Image (cartoon, rainbow over all chains, first blue to last red):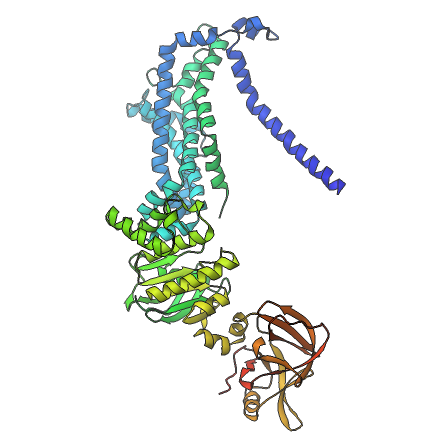
Length: 280
Length: 360
């Protein structure tokens, strides 16, 4: 009895310590980001950094806002690109995922493997061909180019995630609708979509964050007018000097919408992903 | 309303044959139960009739029309599912009216018909709740309402009570039977609960490994089971079988099971001997009578269940259960005598094949 309790306690401690380490590793960069965005350049670059109260300032944020016109354009681009990518990925991905989950499609498994296969190529491999294609199409430095490229890696993930959710819906409900006289399209629209709002939302948030954070393709495919927030932030490095404080302030502003999104809808996101985990 | 007919219907999933040639004729307005253990193909058969699965071979006819290639809706059947399968995001009213809404019927007409159906099922007060806010029995009634509002030719029930507790199950059973008496719609009901099948059905199809083993009235399958399989599946407690042989005792024929000798008529003895001497005997508990004469046995176990007490009798080489009315007490180990009331209540089965041996 006593030994079993010790064992349970030990097991629990391992879990707690593991989780604490995970949280530390995840949160530390964010905490450092927040702290350094509020520090003066000199205090920040001193060795060791000077944490006295006099080295904290809001100047970085006012500095960033001074450059707001430019940065605002970046944020707007990011927002538009991420929103369109997410909307199209869900609008196209959800029916595709449902078809692959429920309809008897010849070669469905091959299609699924092919969709997954697109994820196997590292971005660098397709970067140059992609640039050539986009420049032939006259799409370099357009938001459309980014939406197309972001869809190419978001859509497969959306399809895979949503297919898992749809498979987890008890088939009885859809069968009942079929007996009630609903066509496959009606079953999808009137039954499956309304009961999948949480998973759809969670997947949408996922796609949005992926697009919002993307840096590499934005760097290659944009020059001026279509540049996104992550590119703007990187600009604080190197023009004349690396303005760490302002860079961090801009980064804090860039992650703010995503963090807000996650906090606001955390219940829905958790529910969405939890639903997908429970099979049968 | 319509008759339903299955002709040599088969269904395989890959290499696994689930239905191996099902023949079934359900008359117009009849209540038929498909009864069997899990994996016998009863739910698949129901899905084939509904059109939720495509038959591999054979013909399915509803109202004399071959429906193999029709959608579930075109077959004009309504189905009640095992887990209710209610639409979780719709209210009770929307659940019941969904099928009418799909047909483009005017909102007001839908509302009136939903109200009428809800009234008949005592769902009026919960019309605007969603399924998650209902009790199990109410959810089941919504599922019934969804089927009734269709006014279909055939009702299909797939183990509709399996999620309900015992008390509610009996109540819903009565409701479904009354519903059938009121509407008179041809109904096919799937269950693994023999009591449910006996109490609801006009006829029962006992299924075994993808085929219909016996198709008859509840009285027929209970009193004249065609095989050990059916005999054991129908009736509670399950029938026990006693292996034995025909012998002569003092010039009279008997069926000997260990130390017990069941007296036989000459005619029955002759039939048994013709059919091969090794056979198995079964007798329903209500036909095993305790008394002062007959075969000697000791009481091994007595289980009172309220209206009756089941007394397990044992003797050297055999065991049998008797049903005694009321809450009786028996001391374990006490000596009793018993006999089977009438010879026709002795059921004999071929010991190898398990088929019932014909006595007529």
